[in-house]
Image: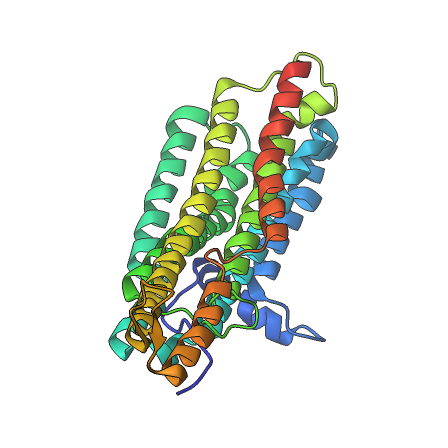
Length: 349
């Protein structure tokens, strides 16, 4: 059976919309190496907004958004980060399952649940609902004061930025909540001969860690977006209660996600390790006569005892977390940094 794992049923919302807009065709016609179509898709509309629409605003008596609030650039960087993050996490998901040798270790009926994170129908329904909410907010609450904001409020946000947010949310949730739960319910065995001493779960641990790094990077960009005017000493600007609550909630969601995913994998690894130790313990009992009396005990099966001790060493050396001490230190820094920055700025206000 093939060692490669391919999430063949997974459909990417960003890629789908980029293809509908013709960017897949554009990617193949441009000279040089093919560029990932979503990069062209998001890049084209970012250029349209910043280099065309905002320049028009500036030339007609307004102020370019980057001159008025330079921290807005963090929002555009965050969108690109979202596209990069989705692509990276999707590949990491496939690589992690390939490293687990999922196709070699579980039945075909069980492997099918890993071939997609979420159904295409679920993504489309959530996306359409989000589009309706944005349109309703624009029409009934914000309004459309001019043609430039009309393009952004009625098109760019719904059909460019929103797919990135929805796809990123689904992918991240799938990796940190669905994947660990599916691995646990599928009852993966540990690979006790793993040279990394992680039971074969090193790639899963790396995926959880690095996807959380991407999430934290997005949170830091949101921090710059919200607190940028404070850092730039814009007079009279104070972040609103909604922004503060959203930032803290997003930070808490990230903390819960990495905590849940790591703990779930740890629980699986710990249970499997303990089960194997108990099995070997039984074999050791069977190889020794009077095992509880060290003075009168007698090894009746030396070969079986030696084999049990050899396997016991392998099992005991296996970690019960898919992470090293260095990884835990890096995760701890990623957890604390956003809140420390927010508290520092809040104290300075």
